[in-house]
Length: 110
Length: 118
Image (cartoon, rainbow over the protein chains, first blue to last red):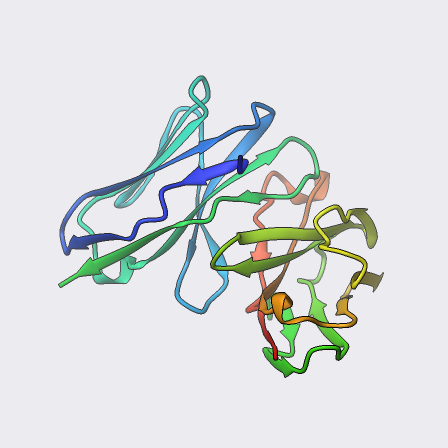
């Protein structure tokens, strides 16, 4: 079983729609959580960190459920420019590497 | 800052040839990571270094792969001999960790090297 599991999609949504991605992780020692965004043929880039209390950055809301080992990302009012692959990422404490899910592909359609 | 620099950006080679991928991390970053990305397996960690010292190379597929970090500003990933199944995008990433990071441990990726082994 992969350490981080995501629905690969693709999610095809119209502009303005709200879309949610989910992710589960298997290592209960995971301490830090992130969403990265990867555009086609580009490198992954940090979208946002995920905090226990949940956090929001503009149209993006991330939530964490430690008991269920579940992370989510909500995108409101989708834009064409949101089309990308969204990677769920976890990390144990200390100087350890990030562990990536395979990503969920989103296409926002005009 | 120029960000993480990787070279070459594209490499096409024949099976059996040696391939060397290069990475220059962001200045001041003390951790460096090599990842490989394929459609089938996603983004996989191959090896990482802290302060130029290899910490975990358990992700390196086999003895054909080797990585070095002779100094804080340069790392190489070598494949010898290369095989068609090594075709993938290889990413190098760096971050600053520890007390100097001030809680900001964002990991930055280079643009990747697209490797095709024929």
